[in-house]
Length: 109
Image 1: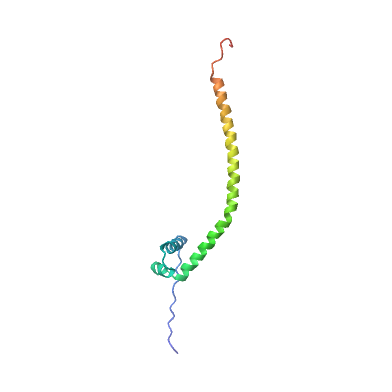
Image 2: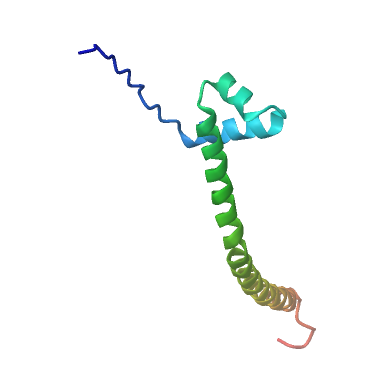
């Protein structure tokens, strides 16, 4: 029987920030994925996978945007109404304070 040596590489887990930075580095450098992967010491296949994953995440975020936009518009309208109400209350209070601070005309005691 032949002596066979099996070498198992330990799978390294990279955090999200590292993956995002690696993808940005690759995209912004103008270099190939192979060169970027080699510089970072990662597998080119991992770099491609991270790129796909990031694209899918971005797509999901884009799909949620209309819902967020509608919620922001609704909140904006509510805040505008509240601001109008509070502004009106302030004006009424300023007028009342002005009236109350006036000295009464003579003969009104």
